[in-house]
Structure formats: C-alpha cells, structure tokens
Length: 564
Image (cartoon, rainbow, N blue to C red):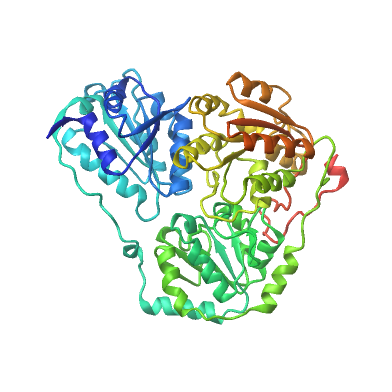
C-alpha cells in the first residue's frame, strides 16, 4: 500500500510494539502529529510541559520496562531541548529512540528558521543517528534504529526527518521485528569460561562489583544464585543498587565515593574483584592506582571497549552478563567462605556519625528513606534527581527488586527525576511511584507538575528541602573554607503553594512525626502530591571519599567545628 512518510512513522512504531510516545509538537513535525491524531486509538501520545521532560519520561519508561522509550520533538530548539535527556540515556545505557523532524531539505544549511544540525549535535551522545533524505529509506531506518537501541549495550538513537519526507508517499510493507540472540554477543571460548571459573573457585576473598549491566541484562536472578552458591559478598554501583536484595547478608550496598565502609573495604582487602556489567567510573574507583591494588580484577561486560579502559584486568569475558552467569554457574564450586564473610559483617556494623536521629525542627534523611519504604513497600518505584538526596537514597533505601530505583548516574542530571517518574507511571499505571527530589533540582523541572496534574498521575514528590545546593555546599564546607558561593537557596517558591497552584495536594513536614503522617496520608490518597520535607542545611552525606583519594580513605565523621 502507498502511504505518506508520516504514516510510515506511525506504522513502524506500532510494528515495533510502541504503545506510548512522549513529546511536544511544532511546525516541522506537524505531519507526524496529524497522523498521530488519526491513529490515537493505536498509540498514546503524552504531551509534557517541556521537551526535556519528555526525553526523561521516555528514559524512565525504558529503564523500568526494558523496552525502548520513544520521544518526539520538532526542529531547532525542540530538538536541542532533547540533548540533555539523550546524553543522560547514553551515559546510563538506556534504550530510547528520539524522532525529530527538520526543515525541508531545500532549506537545510541556509540558517533557516528553527533549523539545527541535530545529527551533528547528538553524534557524540548517541549509539547512532540518522537523517532520512528519501522516504524510501524511512521504514528501514526506523526499524534499524530500534534494533540498535536495544541490541548489545543499549543506548539512545536519533532519527531526523526533513519535513518533505514526512509528506512524500511510498509503498509500505510491514515486516516482522528483528530479534537478536544475546548469545551472539558472547565472544569467548569454553576454555576461557573454564579458566574464569577456576580463578573464582581458587580465590579466598572474592567480592562482586555489580554494575548497571545487571539490570540491563535482567540478570538479578543469576547474580543472586551466583553470590549464594559461591558465598561471595556483593558491592553495588549506584546503577545497581536495586540489582541485589539490600536485606541479603551478602549485600554490602554501594561502593565508591559515598559507598559503605563494608563495600570499600571489601574491594580493598579482597584477592579477586569480579566486575559484572560495570564500567569502573571515577566515582567508584577514585584513585585508580590504589583501587583493589592487591587484588586481581576479572571483568565481565558486553562492551569490549570497557575492558581495561579504566582498570587493568587479570582476565575478562566479553558478552551478555545474564548468559555468562548462566554458563558459569555449573562450573562454580558450592563453598563457604566463612572467615571472609564474617569480616564483611564486622565492616557492615561501622556506620558514619549522624547529626540527630530524631531532630525536632528538621528531618533526618535516613528516616525519610525508611519511612517511605515502610509505607510504600518493596514494589514501589523510587526516582531521584541528583545531589545529596540521591546519595541518601542510595545509602539508606533498602531496595529489594530490580528496576525499581531509577536515577541519573553517569551524567548526573539535575532535572531528570520528575520526567522519569512520569514515564514509569505511564508504563506501570497501577504501580506506586515516589519521586525523591532536592529543592535545587526540583526547581529545574517543577513545570512538569502541569503534566502530572493533567494526566492525574498519582506520583508522590518528596522535596528534600535543605535550602541549599547541598552537595556543592558540602564541598565548600570541607574544602573551600566555608565560602558558600551561590549555593544558598533562601528564596522561593513555596512548594506547597506551587503544588496547589497546579491543582495538586501540597503538604509540609518539619519533623519526623509530621513527615510520617503526611506521607501516609498522601500515599493513601491515590492522588498526585508534593511534600515539602525540611532537612537541616548542614546535613552531610557520609561516608565520603575526598576527590583523588583511595576508596579506603573515607571521612566517617566531621568535627563540630566544621559542622558549625
């Protein structure tokens, strides 16, 4: 059948199993939006308040489901407003497809109104991008984009379509979705697999360093079986905080700059670090010359470019971590490493000092996390922005199930979480979604309250309000002589009044008792809500590894002089 390019876009999206799109219309993409209108019974379009919010929503949708998230934007500023969201997805290996439309080909390169070379702009932050010059290439380009986005190490792909291509007609023939076998990414021999098992079996003090690839590969079940069979402690990167049950005795929680004493010392004192789907970011390894200096490192990852990139390895297997663990498990000895695990348990007892577990005129961040979990349970999705509140969630929230903690890791995007929460809620309409935000980050995306209210999304937003850009202030306090340059947020808005202005319930809590009451009330209401939770301006994120120091050099407490 002969159809328009814009109809091709819709047909290919349906063919790929897309049911939800996030976006914002404009002149160059009008033909596609007109076709969406005609096919609204087949695909739901979510209109956000800003294109960046749409990109983060597509990302949250993708991370929580494992499916490809889709975002639309028009040319020029519409397209460039996606850049931060695309970069966020790229750094965290999240599969999204961004479709933008550009000015007609005849106007490209002429500084036309709302013209931008978006493929040039996004080349460094996409797995691949395309500009479609001929409508005959459109369908296969879209199919290829989806395949690339979800294959191997996932990531974002952008397709830019000049306006006349969306209007031109072409013969269209549906095709089955191209499926891949995860096995095809396994680039090792049986001998190499056996050698890997021998290294693991012969180690006395091994530790697993689990990365975000565990979730991307849906390998949490295999990770649990592997850790229990071999009796190996599991430390986690930020992106893997939900990949292994926090309550499990072998879980040492997060490793790195704000990691636990148990995780950082386990890496330091181990004789083997087994890295699974991780990239050894600087926030994990800090001083690379002293990271696991007396230990062998064995790296398993689907991306060969990550092997030996930041940390030299004694061995590696390139491939899908789920598939590799399934093959390794029969070769792994069932043994107890009692002395090593007991040592881990001793380290787990060492916590940093807290200001006050129950302050009268503010709320302890640990209490916030524990209260939310007590009410929301293990099945709730938790999103964050970026900053102190994000680290507190990573340090204190007892995640039990994979893909329930959605946060920006690699890029550290303030403004990510509200959009991500919306994407998660649309992907899981019956689920509970709690977004924990800092007051600094939330002012960057609070316009999406309009989207939350319009679609009546029962998202609870907890604004951890300490009146400052807390992470930056903390560094200014410790390393810049308390010169708080442009980090104090002693100006509006009033978050409760702002929520009410959008037609959303607003609550304020100034102590633990108040927070318990208002969070439970908001949760039971089943409606969107914003909770302004007061936290002391000088609350710290501890432990902390100063920049450039080895991860065993942790600040566990801060003197009264520095606190004041």
